[in-house]
Image 1 (tube, one colour):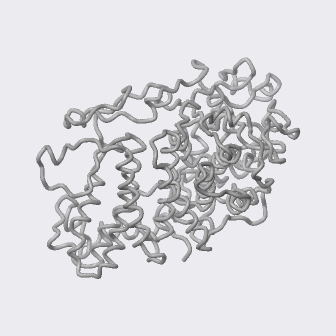
Image 2 (image 1 turned 120 degrees about the vertical axis):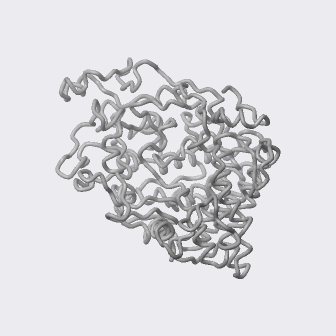
Image 3 (image 1 turned 30 degrees about the horizontal axis):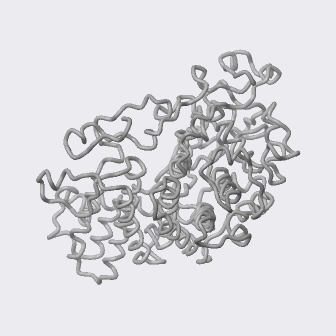
Length: 563
């Protein structure tokens, strides 16, 4: 089977764990009281124990994804970016919580007792290390240096429980070792609902691209090891022949339709997905996206090319932005397939004629429609059954292009038109956009955003970043990207909190009561937050503060700078 409907199968596995009187180890042994002597006996025990990890998978969620970035401006300003975030007291619910690491390390301390072959044991060790790598990566992204615990702690002395923070690079070197083990030992073919080799490769490519480019743009060194690992992992997925870009030959609708499918398990773009079914497991994404008060920013919308492959500032096809109708003319079809424009069915029988500003639908006029259908039944029931991606093949292609271009920019690889054609241009083919070429001109707008990008492939790297932003919009990658590129100050750009242009002639088309409270700037762009003209980035915001209780308990911990 070429892709996985992970969560649906795992849901039933977990149901069996928590309800089966005879075989349920969670019923027989609370997690804190599992007896290694009586539990870790066979493969079933190993499998059942590992089932609990799967709730930690990074499932796609369009609702609030990227609210903490320059892509969106929700009605309620993100407290972190507004500078009003306060240091939490407890680690509970934060990435500093080490309880999941303890769960993983408990397995590693006891799995060897099972009466099965080493090859079977290593499958479940691989699953465990997959999740340990994921958890530590999240910790490093959030806090930087963190204590690294790779053994189950039974010693309750302070020296064992309260260690020092290990340097970011050392932790990530260990993360790479865990990922390599997972890739080497999790099989290509596994039971439905379990991780397979391609899932491990997808996580490895994602993490290694992040770390490799972090080391590149933060000047910490040794980036090539991670960039090459990201490239190799992505290339293995690509060379497998098991995945592809979803397309039915309808460039004006295929991208939108990709994210409102009842089943992704047979979709060529799905490496791993979260499965939803009526009654069994549902989500409220249709209703939530329709009432979220969310909206893409002017800056995000500006990033979409015109249909001649040129930026708006360089294309004769650009019609301006005096209205949303004008703004989408001759633009990359992915723009119209991510925002609600005239003719979009908000609900069956309820077609949009004007952007629904001044309501709980959108803050900017650029209403997010990615992952939202027009199903009236799903709206009324607040229950949708569209599957969500966990790992999408489009991301793999973007990772391949970026990692290889970065290596080539340093003279450590070659990057040619063939590389673009088997990565970026496959994404453009889906929506009928012109191919990117090696001679693409440098866009001054992008160059100003990313001054750290230099070298012979500057033009290519900048365009790959644009493609990533456009293709992965609202999928939760943007802040992590700004972090690794050392580009957090892009949050300062006033266009990140502006919406569509609301000229008096356009305002006159609305009921006065609907738009009377909307404030615009001197150029008639909607100001989502009337009390400020821009957010204020502080470099301390690359990292979150350590919870206060943890610093009190552990004298070896010092708070992150600026907090």
